[in-house]
Amino acid sequence: MLLVVTGSSCSGKTTLARALGDRRRGVVFHDHDEIGVPEDADAQWRNRTTEQWIRRALEYQDRGLDVVLTGQSPLGEILASPSAPQLDGIAVCLVHVSDEERRRRLDRRDGGRWSPAVLDSFVGWGAWHLGHAEDPRHRPDVIIDGSWPEMVWDRWSTWTKEDPRWYTYVLDTTGRSIAQSVDDLEQWVMGQRRAARSGKLALSKGWVDVEP
Image (cartoon, rainbow, N blue to C red; front, side, top):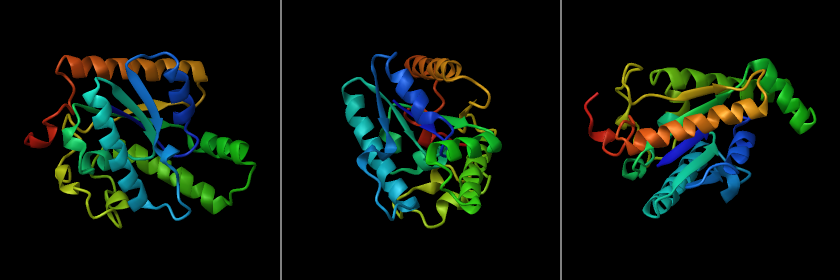
């Protein structure tokens, strides 16, 4: 299965996944950007690269391994990726943080090089992620407009937030230690893998054929 750990910059997703990688067996950890990020990276690049990772996850799946992938692709993008229905299971965790804390982390990480407008864009992307996690009808244009033409958005475009398949676990790292958040992420990964093995995962293979 594919377990996606997503979120805007400086929420802590990569730090948590790296720490968790030392604990779990039978799970392979990768970061979306390790393939390489071009200077002109845009939504279409993110879409295409996500599809590449899904295809790689399918190769791991054939070897009996699950994949934890960190990046910025939300649930809607994962489900719309051409090869997504071939996965045995899909689960998404949004690592979130308060606006004020995100600004502080960005300043600390990048030496204060971002203008207020750029910081606002990071914060706004994080807020959109949260709204999207709660409701598929929350500004879908943000990811659909200008996207890669191969994306299949109508797989979920009629869903509502009551659909059990529309579920993103939100892990808020605000005011929490790395150790605490890693424990939370580990419990989520273990729980989703158990659900997949027992046939209780909402996004198990065949989800695309279920009537909403």
